[in-house]
Length: 166
Image (cartoon, rainbow, N blue to C red; front, side):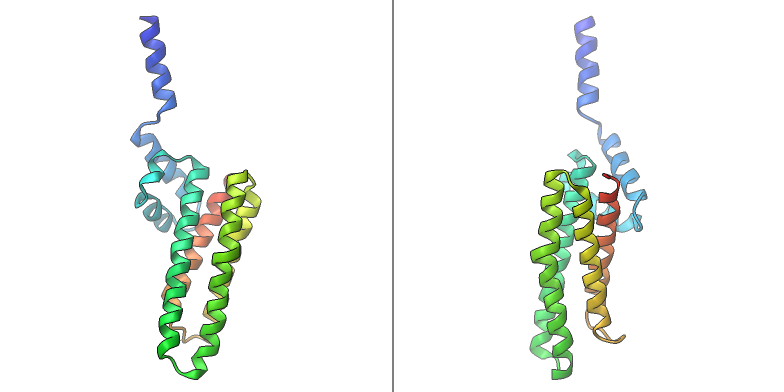
């Protein structure tokens, strides 16, 4: 009986239930500025069901990467059809999204892998700022508002999640 009791206890503590994992996701997301974006992003990723907070943050960095690629793709589409006046702003935004993809996201990934959440938070905050700067390039008439808002919001959620690791 003692052996069975020990094995059962060990199994429960080693492998959290689905409800416990959902609770971790919910509790983690409640500590971010946008619960809905956080929860939806993590719920859509099957890896979140087995992740700890670091793993959840890594998933959010992947969501950031997807949003950055979406933004850059939209910029490329618009560059083919927009007037010359918008091209300067689109080019600037392209540079900002490239910076997110080649600097901010790799910084966040590496920092999380090395257990240095402060640098991961900095990378996520930088990405949020780049999206905001892109939006301001258009003086209120941005054709990238949806992409910029999505990039900004996912990035600040990621930064807040990473901050929980400090």
